[in-house]
Length: 191
Image (tube, rainbow, N blue to C red; front, side, top):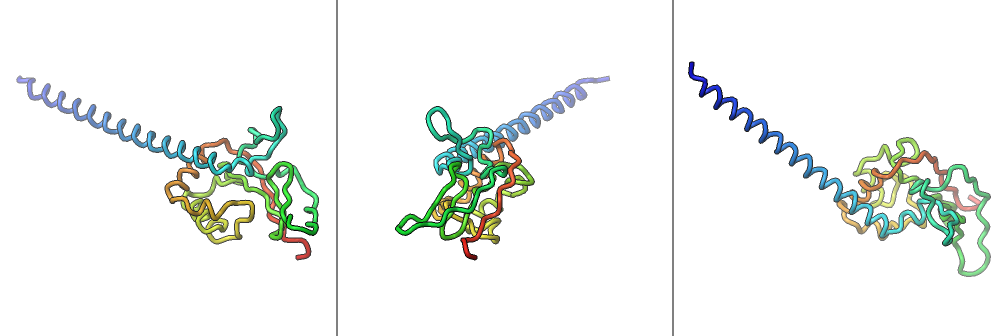
């Protein structure tokens, strides 16, 4: 019996298996590289736009106020109820902010910065990238809900490309989830 055709067939099968494995590995590595690049681009944009300045409560550190690392991007602390915002006095000053930099009051009422972590119940964990893009582009919650309130820089963020917003979303999905149910905005006094 001539075993040469069987050996050739086995070598060809092995070569095809290895070629498939290398191709699959290359696709996986390429996908991972694209994902890592997107997350790093998102980290850059979130940092450049100063998202943590308002969406992470400030605590007093040795060098002054700094974002609380345990509540990074978790929004206004749910366990920090605030008294009503002081009424504005005469003059050009119309905005007041909590010491945490996560609650703001002005003619629009009182707004609380949102939880941007991937917690499913209290953050953006149930959002899709499209939901995030629609929210930022439209300036409305999930693209059709209530208006995003000051100090959210909607005018600046909405000029970003969809790809940049998707990168920001990818980075936000990569941070640790924090359970923190932020209060709903309050209407202006007298309404």
